[in-house]
Amino acid sequence: MRVMGVDPGLTRCGVGVVEGAPGKRLHLVHVTVVRTGADEDHALRLLGVERGIEALMDELRPDAVAVERVFSQHNVRTVMGTAQAAGIAMLAAARRGLPVALHTPSEAKAAVTGNGRADKAQVTAMVTRLLHLDTAPKPADAADALALAICHVWRGSAQRRLAHERVSRIEELARAERERLAARNGTAPSGGPPAPRGSRPKDPSRGGSAQ
Image 1 (tube, rainbow, N blue to C red):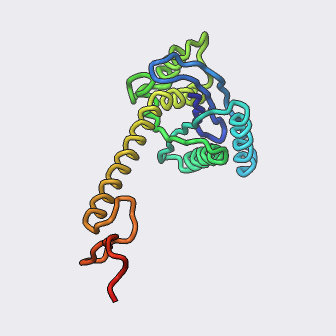
Image 2 (image 1 turned 60 degrees about the vertical axis):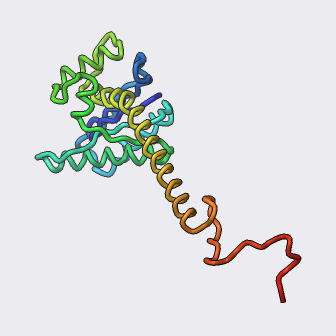
Image 3 (image 1 turned 30 degrees about the vertical axis):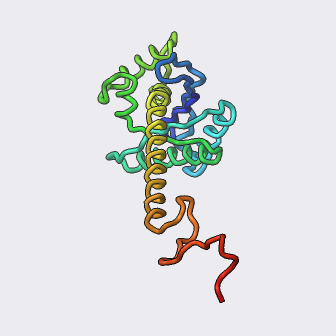
């Protein structure tokens, strides 16, 4: 499974792509940072993030996209820009029919380090180790994007399995309900109009109805 992790931001938007599966070795496909200038027009900055992310999606062709879930911060201006960048990544994925998952920073940290409160240095060190890299990915936004991708590779399979089990259970309950209603109404489980109460099936031995 190939997953693109996106650590959203306007000035630096980390993008990391990882390939792997639970219990198997992880492989780094690509990591980079999409940058825009702080002095640029806000709308143009959003456009730059969009173009950068879409170009990477088209080039690297991920199977799924994992985006960091944005939480409120003291700096409203910063969180607004981060949320907008996250929305751009989600929209770009949706245009291509790619499934999108949102993971909190604590979930990503816990996935790669075992500690949801790990600092950036610990996350970077574990990402470097898990991907068997010679040098640590920089800046921190790049390492965070890779941590999101790793988190989804490991958690995504379990989430898909649970979702499949929920759908199967719902289908099973729906089938049982249809059978119950059919039995009560005197119809076959496949459906069809219920038989009128008190009516009897025709007897083929009688050549027709009495006049």
